[in-house]
Length: 299
Image (cartoon, rainbow, N blue to C red; front, side):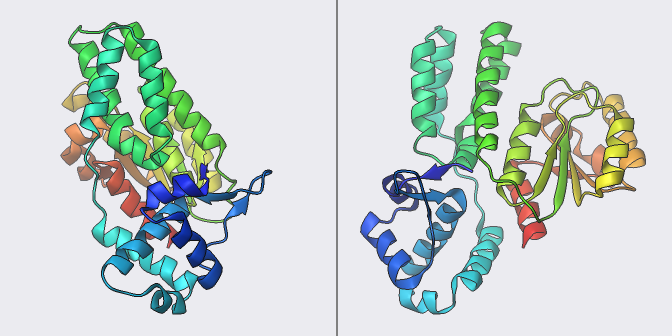
């Protein structure tokens, strides 16, 4: 999982380094790991928790009163609060426009500098929702309109896939927790959405198996029969027709619902939502919808 030194953690939570150290020392609310240089290292989970504490303090509660409840109870309350009040932050529109412009004008150095700069100050899960997915959607639309070439679209997609892979490699191995399998059906060629969902599941404490794209249904069925996952997730970016949606929905329902609850997401799933729901498949319209489900599974 990505980690942050205290000054970046301060920016992400809206709390000063002095307050963060005080809450850590006086109330034992967080125990950050230490790097080789002995600097404190905070996780995305710490970011979410301290943001919750700040919201409660801003409402008028004292940190001392909150600390008396204990870290475990506060973590439970912060998770309940996340489910009840979860809001999608608006995409960083100006950044998306600047990145798109850089791609259109072949300004690779500007594109990578702006992308890396944004990723340096925003937790990765937030970055996925606030500008990485909006950017991918914008670039995909420009390719379909003939404004940019397929090579430019592939450059952006593959660079973002590298970022997701790098973030996944930093996650700790989860020993316990709900088992989730993430994949794409055999007809699906684009897997960046599935890869991002796998990252999100693993970061939320799920034992996640990411199987990639173009996965044969027979092999997937055998794999899931052995694992007995709590949830199986499919990314559907392109579904060509209503008939194709019906075929996919029927196949996933008949072949896999006996081994696991099945959910689908992506543009293709949302476009034919009623067809998938008719086959008793859950349709996740956004990452936030999925996040709510994950919170109910892990807490």
